[in-house]
Length: 269
Image 1 (cartoon, rainbow, N blue to C red):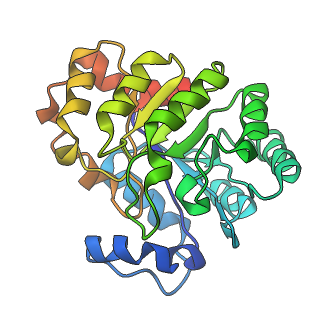
Image 2 (cartoon, rainbow, N blue to C red; image 1 turned 90 degrees about the vertical axis):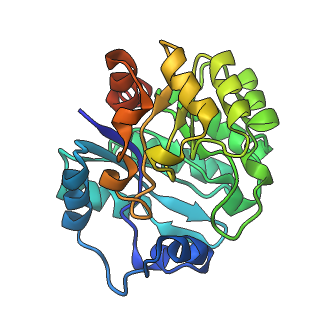
């Protein structure tokens, strides 16, 4: 079984947003001019052998780019393959908490994702803290981005130390999934992951052949590593992301934890 921990089934307004121009340039692709059918995302999962994809809503200071209800409609089109991850508006903390509750209790979502660089607010900002408490109460993980930003936004908010480290100290029961590996602070992210039992790393936005050596060492040498597979689809397809997996040197237990076990634990799939 393979679980993709970070995917988007994007709307046109999300995929054509100017902040993603740099990513499209790197990939040599162009954003779609029309809404993409859910079958396209499921087809990409099939091509890469991915069984379950966690697709996220996107909210920023200008409003929703992929709304929670849109994500729910995508999941409804492929309920055996897609799982919803909520996002919320940080500017309205109580409304955000109520919306998160609705997403989990009524829509069946399995996590919350807030992308700090989109808000230019680090994860230690006070506006996140009611959401952390609610995540603990709901039994869902908080998913975020660590490392530099590919989009044209500042990278400082993606530092694992001090931000993720401090949040994990303040909320030891909170499950935190740091997406995008943490490069160029990968060693920091690995250290935070080893220090805090409920902190995980996902490999979205990187292909296997681009994993930093310190991440590979952690995955191959620590028998209880907490790294999970992710793509950041549609920027990277699953088949491309997993090319070269056999070259990592993972034993059977480490490979299973990476491809599905850690995600199943963190998201209670």
